[in-house]
Length: 172
Image (spheres, rainbow, N blue to C red):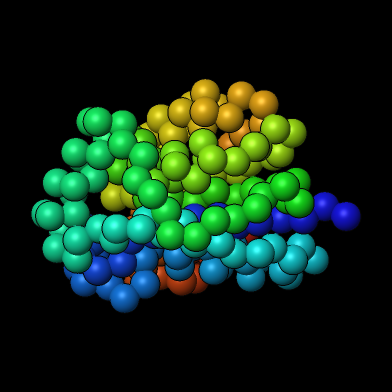
């Protein structure tokens, strides 16, 4: 029987355009996605990609660290492992940071075999949509099928659950 996974990275604390938050924008979208899939009869497991070393709570410090990781193509260690071998469909969520996924998402991708899996990317952003992340995913996962993604503005995800749900439902 086909299994579905929602794997995501999300950053809480201080975020651009939404201030200090206790639950990250991408996490909010992931939870709604799980509910929408459930209503369609799809039971999806949730897995949060967490870097071993958390990003700073302060926005400016966080982006300084994230930019440094991006420029050096760092692969920060993640806290927990996840066996994806039993999943056929994977929804992959992340914030769009400068047109790319956070480097800990690459750590997650590069440590696993995605061959034959169907990947649906979704991201949160503050104006850049999916950026070039779909193409980067296709390059990083050539043996999988990367489908069209969903981009939800972070402030919408954080402050308008009804609109976020409508965007997710329209995508599914």
